[in-house]
Length: 596
Image 1 (cartoon, rainbow, N blue to C red):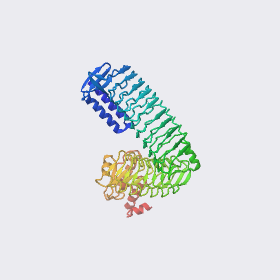
Image 2 (spheres, rainbow, N blue to C red):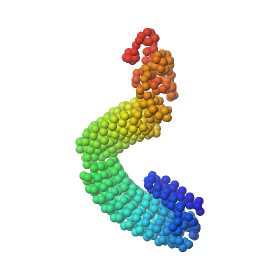
Image 3 (cartoon, rainbow, N blue to C red):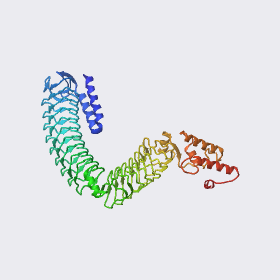
């Protein structure tokens, strides 16, 4: 019996790990804590008919399991004169033959996953004493058609009715104050839902994928509608957002393809990214002046946005430029714009030039993603933030000016800008984000300013043309794979610095910025002769066939006599020419040799 109990604990922990992406670390912690409680609770164990149980430290009975083939179960109010007060975690989990369960009024707690995967269960009555419908309690009960939630219940936990595809009606009592993430996810037979005034919180994806939900009443008690709450409710034709709501989070109504109109109340100040993305019937939208933050892709793939684009290719709402994807040629953003929303010019391949006014303070995520016709851009000093992926895959961008007002180069900001030859990072920047310049194959050298303290994972991954990067002593963190596929790179820094340690640990050549060397003198003999010619030519031959050149960073710097960042046949020619001239008695300087 103890082995069975351990298996149930492990099952709960495993399921919590699998679900952590959708319910978060806090919820997983709850699973672990409740699993631990279950383990310590059953000091005594026994069986009662088809049921197994444990006796808690309080002398009460907890139902811990049943025979897997059972079809009908009636849980007694007491066993051995001890009250049955709890149905433990996983107690009836995956009892696929179970069609009916009668729960006595003595039960006040139903544990996590208690009826998870009971695919034949058609109905159940929760007793009046139960205060919470637990984590994934009825998840996967695909035959469950109706359920009565008593007035004693205060919360409906994460994924409580996830995938209950036959559930046609749920009455939520006025006692419930919180509906957590995924509570009714993919309850595809739900048609109508009334949320009582007692509810103050609706979690992320609470009604995701309820494809037959036509109408839902949201009470004035709600102040925030969670991310993806109604994502994929394709039959939803009407919804009233109450005046109590101040934020509409990301993807809240995404894919609600039957929604024709929406009125955003005056109380709302922010609309999250993709909030109405793919609402393919949405033609009427009322946005009050108080909405000051509109994120990316909010109305993408809606008839409303198409109509706005036809009026003006620059769609501006309350000072936010939300869309310019139909623009071509050179575009000047008007001074009335204060922010460029995420994805505003996403994949606008016809855009060749853009003028951003000093009124703009922020550029959103993916704002100019894959604008392959854009060749240069100047960001004004007024801009204080540039979003992730802002200029990702702008392959023809050769010049960009980053102002001193920027403190961070965001993740993927310039990834894949293959035409970018130089970039100046201002002294205001303190962090270079993950993949910030990855795949910028045209970059040959970069100087990181003294203000920077960290360089993110893969920041310069795939910068195959990068020869040198100068990293100051201020940098104390360099991420994983930061210089992957930078095969000819030399890190220039200070002896004893973090940059040197990183270079040594990752087999990257390192050169001290204070080190001195003589041009052309690879062997340090203070004499430039045939040995130096040999080392140079051997290095070139090795690199040509994909091998390590065999030279230190200082030797490579000495061999690169023309200073172009690459040791090649031109350098070997100049060294041979220098040696020949001096061998013939001409005391010719390097300046004179290079000028010929």
